[in-house]
Length: 182
Ligand SMILES: Nc1nc2c(c(=O)[nH]1)N(C=O)[C@@H](CNc1ccc(C(=O)N[C@@H](CCC(=O)O)C(=O)O)cc1)CN2
Ligand SMILES: Nc1ncnc2c1ncn2[C@@H]1O[C@H](COP(=O)(O)OP(=O)(O)OP(=O)(O)O)[C@@H](O)[C@H]1O
Image 1 (tube, helix red, strand yellow):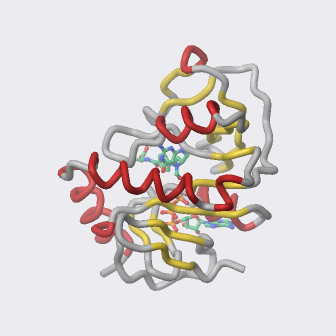
Image 2 (cartoon, helix red, strand yellow; image 1 turned 30 degrees about the vertical axis):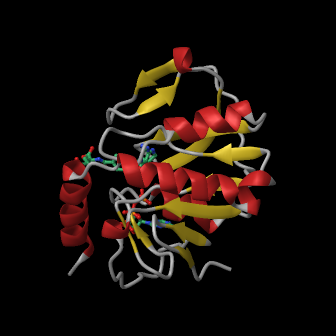
């Protein structure tokens, strides 16, 4: 299956599945990782309704005194920076309907831990997102740890292309997979 078909199939799966029970397990597994415990600056998305809920991750990070950074996309140039999240009061919906932080921004791309979103993942840590290539470009120069959180049902086999950047770890409700990222 090509990327486009995988994306369609897994998006339909995400939109139709009740994820609550799995989310509880996934969050517990994330918070147990040494990479989580040791991180002082964490990058994470502001989830859309069909995605795994990241708001609990953000809340817990702030409670633990971590700094939280969320994506700010330039959809024209296909570039992405991480900007500091302090409060839900500073959010608005961006051009693509994704929550984002209003200006002024405090940019920090030197994150210890990046929670990388995706529609589908492979057991080697390759991923398929919405096709913008934002995370492929960002991960190409990223030095920290990249972790994805995936339902077992989002796993699939992915033929990587040259520009595809894998993550270090994929956590599912059943397994923790080590990606081929070096
Ligand atoms: N919650 C969340 N935020 C995120 C991401 C994500 O996966 N989840 N991203 C992960 O990269 C970035 C945004 N990525 C995007 C990539 C492509 C399009 C886009 O081109 N959308 C199409 C329509 C998409 C569709 O309906 O299938 C368009 O506008 O034409 C939008 C966002 C950063 N923020
Ligand atoms: N490092 C890069 N430099 C330039 N273009 C890139 C780079 N990485 C990816 N791209 C381009 O971006 C697009 C990414 O497509 P792909 O379907 O892999 O995105 P995705 O992983 O689904 O999206 P995202 O990373 O936003 O979640 C491709 O067309 C590719 O040519």
